Length: 459
Image 1 (cartoon, rainbow, N blue to C red):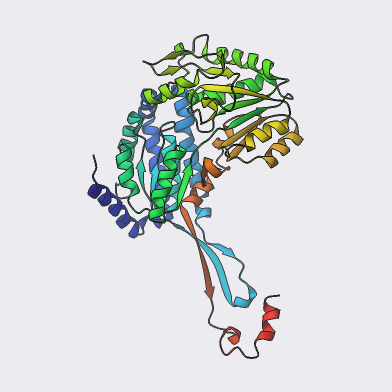
Image 2: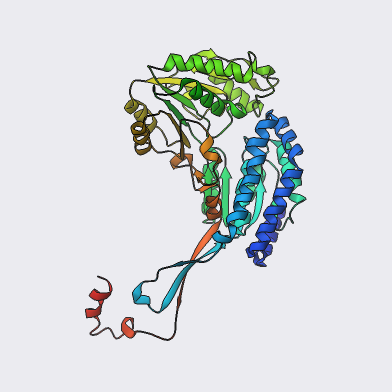
């Protein structure tokens, strides 16, 4: 295990490398992005195998949600990086004439990226892309709960970059605590709110800015005016991909009473279509990450009434895709983010009632509304707050490089993806450059007889 002095040496080595100015060169940044893109392609089989060992993640899911998106994001950075890194001219107030003003995008320096276990490859690499593009050095801490993916990440990074530029530090929470004692220029954390508070508290000791990508109970509201079959497929897919271990998965369903039974029957049919009569035998359904999380989730199965699913296998960390009816807000399953393959169903009589239920709880990371009615869509968008919203589908807003992704309130702070990733790891330095050929003496003492000009200048 790394000790404090070793951690300090790693951090100092990166600070020294950043001080050389090499990472500020735009061509250097592009070359590093290209190198990483090649490495991810070369390691694809090892990545998908590790994800299967850690999470039972189907290869298709692993490629689509963890590997392919990285390549798409890199291409986006390479296409736009020249534009993003240019100085940005802005207007200068007339009373500063003659002068020019502009904004200089510059890297923050050295950043710490702490990754989660649910998408343990992608949710480390995607923030790293922003750090590279913005010209920073980076220290990566993958989750110890997914050790196989952590090892692949460590090997990939070690074989691609100098450790004084980018490196991986593996280990448990004690290593994370050692890292948090160090002074970084930015900390990017993805995970639960409890650890998020620890990260923010540690960062405050150094006045280090943070990005916190957390979670929460993301609601899915279903109005009667929908396409039943399409809605059922999109809800079931978004909930049960990665066995429900997705930070923006629909955490619970708020269904209009008028359509509830019809939607439930459609979702039952979709579960059979996706995973067969026995999902335990399906090669397309993942497993729970650890015994600890399996035990936590299993307790929720005692809440409400199981409509479908509920089967468990502790040895294989299997919990069947489960729909729960008859739950209420006092049940344990509704008191915290589920983060597993259990979908509670609540009903409502009016959209206003559904909105009130959402607004009486902390702001979620995601919100989903199924309705064709544009007035209702506008009402939900205006009267609720969430990190992101998808209308008539689930999850997909996270996949656009044009949309910033992040939380609000207790679901997180800061955003990334595409340009937002570059912005997160960039300081926009304001610059004014004055000329010498004119120097109006108005601002200089003595001030007698100069007040008459103030009204003209600041009207």
